[in-house]
Image (cartoon, rainbow, N blue to C red; front, side):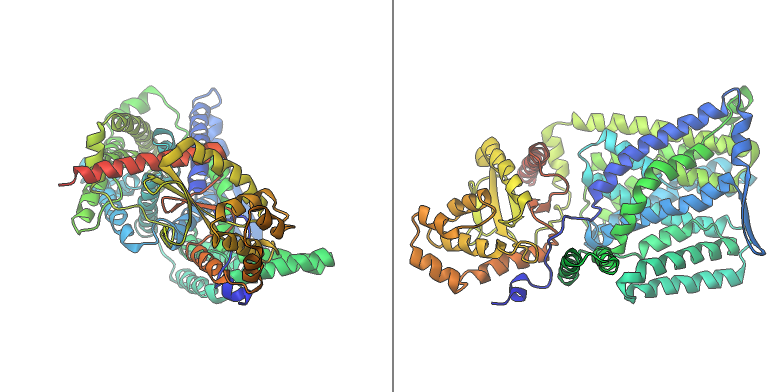
Length: 628
């Protein structure tokens, strides 16, 4: 059988270069710390003996001139409308990745976050208007509506460390928030719209959509130029250009690398190794870049910059308030400050809970229990970045300072409230948690084919609550290292863990991996799969398969006959096909109870992941028992 027939439409040989949601969230955790530090620094600076320098610095004019054309703004505007475009670009990229290949790829799961976001936007606005109806300040209603993505996810990382599902849901809610908020900025907070630049912006957006059919080697560069043009056109039209970032992110697709592209990279790299010329070096670089989706490449480059530099710089430029007795007394009586504060602290939780309930009434199962949803809705009351952005557009002078105080007070109270709620959730009785879990949807399974006792190679008992499945390659050194960890796990968890091995020989980089997999299957035909498996991973040079078979006491004539006729190649092809269908992008790749394990596979990380799966399985069993 030809190699292509074995490996199917896709294979995966490279280390995973994707930016999975766990990496996104992990960066957000640290970025939230930098954001908080910058906000505190801004307050200290604005209340220091040199407090007048705060406004002097951020109102300094910076102009860029090219011939007769000039763009001039103060530093604060460059940060708010320029650099923050990259923040919204990263948010859009991660949302698109989740829609394409992540937890929201099952479209029905989008419905509840959407209704939760919609109600979570509406209720705070109504509360703000209740405080400010009939006054000029009512125009600032947009300042009370949007959850801060970076700050909220960072707080969740502190108060609910194991809540990945909650954080993905909150990310979806926050993205809908941001999209609506940017539309609001474009519509409600734009005084004059120039028609010609707006038409140009729409035309550039159409070009951006069309670039998905462009050759991959220059698609990203062309999209960058079009994105810059879109930003300039929106600014010239009078619409805040930060909306360009989110729009570009939402149209930038994410996808797993295709086998043809990966094998082409291998060939290019091999050619460069044989003839290290500048031309071949450039070809190898371009081929490697083209194998990874533009979504993931952009995230990899931009996310650290937005989390650690751009958003903290935004906080430094906008959070500084010179506090004095007059401002504090005015804020206590200010309907603007109270409208924003109540909108976030009260309106956000009420709106998100109401929207989730309405979405669940349609028959769609919610992903989270009601206590956890409430905790997430309290975190949703943290409005910082977009709220300050809209406040700067809607208010001026003392009104702006009072609005900022309302935003900061709401963020502080919502953070403390979230900590209290999740502390309370942790102390709920197990039977209560089980009943709540009974009403939630099942985990979205990443593994395309369930474990089959009749065909899969399994270590451990059938009654184990946790199944650890590995796609591996006998010539892969990482698989050899992982084998030590797997043995420790099996010894540590005993009968509560079963282990499954599936073949994924990476033929273009490991030339003997496929024949080693055939040897393992030939040994399996004689009842000695695991004995051969252990020997192959211990001897990854794979120099003497016959010696291993002979020392295991196999029927050598049968062993060599099956290898020479490739009797087991079809069985290996089935494993490879299931790996491709599951989006596997390297070896070793682990699945725990059908869900892909993201991140490291050292003993500490995998032990924590297996324990989390144990807890989830125990709660699921209790939930089933509690269901009438």
